Every structure is written in C-alpha cells, then in structure tokens.
Length: 146
Image (tube, rainbow, N blue to C red; front, side, top):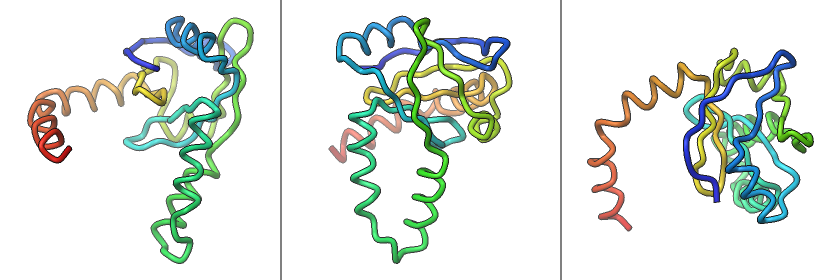
C-alpha cells in the first residue's frame, strides 16, 4: 500500500507532511489513525491502525521470560504513540522519537509496503549508499530461501 521515497522538511512546529500519494492510499483504505514507534536501523516505523494490531499480536506472543523479547517489547512499545494527521496531512513527531532517529530538519519518508519509515536525511543517505551495492546479492539469497 505504501511505496516510494520522498524527501520532506519539518516545518517550524516540528511537523512533517505525509506524502500526497500516501494520503491518497489512506483515503482509499479509510485509514485515519497511525501508530509510530522506534524502528530498526535508526528509523521510525509508522503503521496504520489495523497493521499495528497485527504487529502487536505477533510481539505480544513472544515469551516474556526471554530477556531479548522483554527488551525488544519495552523499546518498541514504550516508544509507540498514536497519531491522527491534521487536515493538511501533517503529524507531529514526539521529541524522543526524533532524537532516536537523529531527525533534525530534513527527512526521507519511505514506503515499505505495510509500513512507512521516517529517516533523517543523513541516516537514509548513509544506509542507501551502503545497501545499494549489495541489493542484488541480498535479493538472490532471499529469493532462494523463499
């Protein structure tokens, strides 16, 4: 549902605007509410409410007796907050999440099928430059597994 890569800037109040293609997809699927939390690779994950519930069920089923499960769930869920974009499609990212993702002003908003990722411009550029050369090798390995 979410595809593409968009460069945006935080406004004076620290808000970002959801790309228009994503807003169109939201309207088409009657999505009004998001959950945003700490993601992997120092980005933020943003899920539509129905997908958030799917993810929540998966993580709730992990054994709380395992320290790694507890640690992951604490970081993931303690960072989560509910978002409803304003009429212009803007959201205000909490300061603790901006700090986690090293977001200052420029961001990349990435569509990754069932989620949106929000990256600082520098982090995305670093990640992309390291990952682009291994993209085909990774695809070959993963497709062989599938």
